[in-house]
Structures are given as structure tokens and as C-alpha cells.
Image (cartoon, rainbow, N blue to C red; front, side):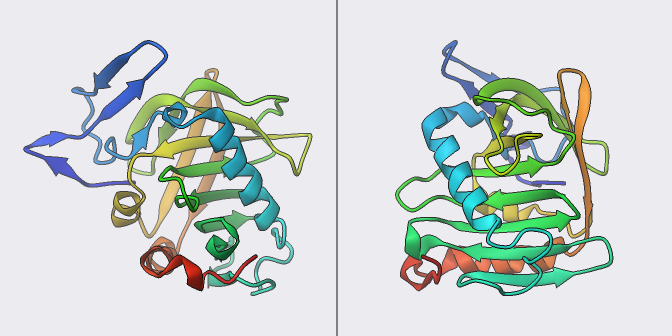
Length: 227
């Protein structure tokens, strides 16, 4: 599950769609994470793409083959198991962000904290099964967790600048701290787009990664090591 927060007995399932000027509240969901996923397009598409480009540039400093080592400034492996590993990136000193990413072969999922100077944060997914796309677009997608909870919101389907054969999906998070608070130690996530499952990942060690991310978020950005 991604979040457990409620207010006054109601889940904070607010999604804003500025294109049509409306705010929707989910009454039917029993989910414990609807508070987390906001409309990715609340932030400008240019900002989301810029964040993604910075993330991809940094993540490929060490992808699945090299990122299991502290192979660059601000990069640290924080958890490893037979199926994959978590790494922490702190690129704030170079105008970037705190991020944790779970790599399982060529498939990965990452939480990306606010970029210096902008409060927006995201959870993103990359896999060969996500269709390639030339320009970012917004689509309604459904994210489902291990316990069967699901939520459908508008999200980004964006180009993968590191691979022309696949795309990347980004969901905007309304609160990165709440996302960390509700992060599961063991999780199974899948994403459906255009009525097809385009992404799936299972992870362990989520709480170890969360601790590393919270430590990064709580420190002064000038201590970020990467440039």
C-alpha cells in the first residue's frame, strides 16, 4: 500500500483536473492510499519532463549493471536481494533531488522527491512493456497494489530518453513525506493503460529504502553530493 492517512474519517482522495476545472473526490474506494496520487498534470508538462530527464541522466550513471555500487557521488546502494536492489540518489547539490529506485533487471520503479526550487514529486515506472512514445501525453491509468487496492487518475506517458523502444510512466505525488510514511516493505505494483497491463514489479526492502529517502529529504540540500 502507498499511504494510510485519513482525515475526519474520510480518505483524502482529491484529484484536480485543471483542464476541465473540477475537483473529484473518491467516495467508493476503501483504499488507504488515495491521498497520495494527484493529477500529474497539476505541474506543467515541461517541469515533469525536465524532472524525468534529470532522473534518467542520473540513473544511467549506473543502471542495472552498475548502480548496485556507490559508483558516483550521491549514489548509494541501500538494499540488495536476489530479485533486485534499491539505490538512493542525492543530486540536490547539482539542482536535482532525492530519489530511491528499485531495479529488477531492466524494470524499475522510483520515488523522485521535489527538484530544488519546485515542490512537485513523482513515482515513476520504466519497463520494456511500456509502449514507446515521442512526446509526453496525459492518460488515465490505473495503479494497483499487492492487496488489491487500485486507483485511476490522469498520469504522464513520457518518452524514455535512454531507450527508443519503451516509454516511462509518471504519477504525481501530492505529498512525498506521506508517500514515504505509507510505503510498504514488500510490494507488488502494476499499472494498466489503454486497458492493458503495461507495468508490473515486486519489491522487498521498501522500509530500508524509505529510511534512506527520509534521511535525504531531512538534510540540507547543500549536502547533496552529486553535481
